[in-house]
Image (cartoon, rainbow, N blue to C red; front, side):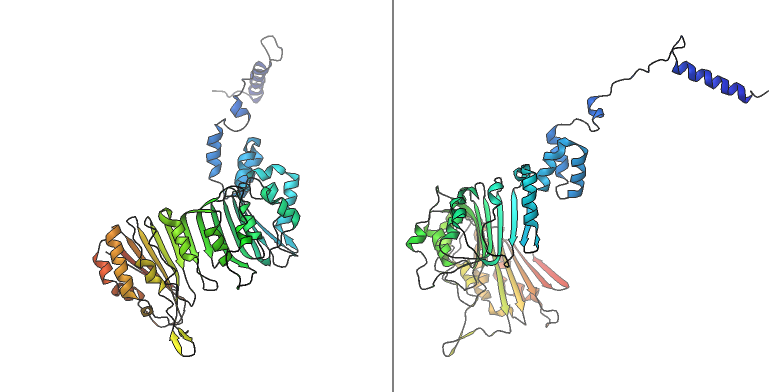
Length: 440
């Protein structure tokens, strides 16, 4: 069989192409174009907006991918902006200021302010003065605000004081750290938060004479436009003036969560009033009294009958420090009396967990705690509540300290608790080893 010549093959190919390209009478035929669906024409399928919000929500912490999505479709801009600017962390320091760049961004793109819900601002103590940031009135959608003043002295000018109601219109959770106040500026800031629900004060100092009473007429005169109800409160060695104002002042304390750490540097006269103010609404309580003073009489939980969780933290046992007070003869300091005192008057049928955080330092010995009283109170609470989980977290900060079998030491001292219904757990951390034991 003879093979066709190359010229014949090429000729046939030309005729086929001509039939496809030209009409039946030799005219050029306009190819028929089938219209594409609208969703394919735009490059992305047309899904409901709430579906896209759910999909992009998985990328909330991947800002690079969110930026790529924003370049893909203009409809993604509000969703991406919400995730990128939902929580903003800024630092304001001489020579390096994220705060200044962010204020410029707000000038160029004012719509960014609508997406900011949480703001964490740290001010350097080297700044000229510590005052409220001028950008706050523009961020009128903020619900969670953290202000760290870097240990500076807070100063509020008259212009800021007049515009104060515009600074915290929707703030529900306020955290103030590392600052010294004078006069009534701190109380005025709190009164300017009409929606306040949670308050945290850490390392807040008050420049006021200790000879004056804690609650004076000038403090009582500071009241908010309407009543504020707090359900979350965290105080770490606060000024007694603030505690007295919270207890006696215009705020209503319907506390569900209370975290209290008192180092003994200030008067604990009003601490029992906080527990009484919490009453039956208090569900979660965290206590720490790491100072050198006895807080046995200050811890009265008899009114908190609906407590669910209790955390006794910062129980620091230092073996190098003699627990003695010379007045002039040495008298033993009863530093750890607050631990069994917190359990002695507590009665709650809703209690589910009690947690102890103990730290051993420089050969500290667990025997300094009144284990007999602790065991008796825990056994009683376990019988009353039923199903109580009690945990002890013991940490040893020494890298080359003496060997200590803390797991057996704690379990051995809780015979009555191990007999009643419930669970007991001990976790001993001595880097890099971690020992854990549960009963039953």
